[in-house]
Length: 77
Image 1: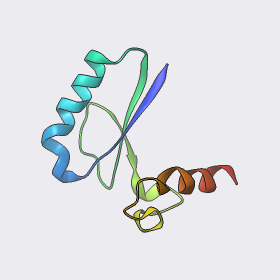
Image 2: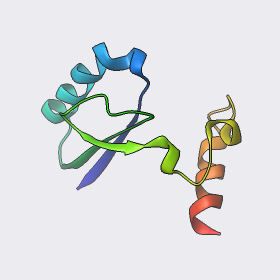
Image 3: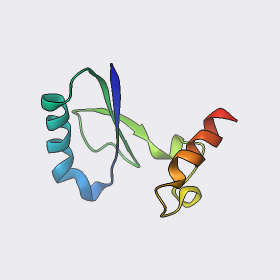
Image 4: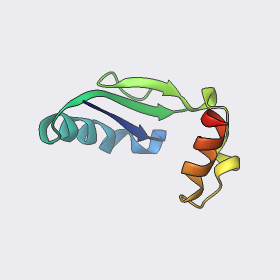
C-alpha cells in the first residue's frame, strides 16, 4: 500500500479534484491521498496543513532537489 501526497495551492482547486479521481482510478494499492496546502481545498482527500511541517517553503526554496534534503533533516536528524 502507498500513500500519495499532493502539494497544492488554492489556484489548483479546479485540477485537484481531477487529480484525486485519476489517482483513485489508475493507481493500484493506494492507502491514503493527502493534500498538503495552507487551507483545506477538497473533501475527496485528507488535508495536512503545510504550516505543520517543521520547515517552510523558504527553507526549501525554488529548487525541488532541496525538498528531500530538508525533509530528511527535519525528520531524521
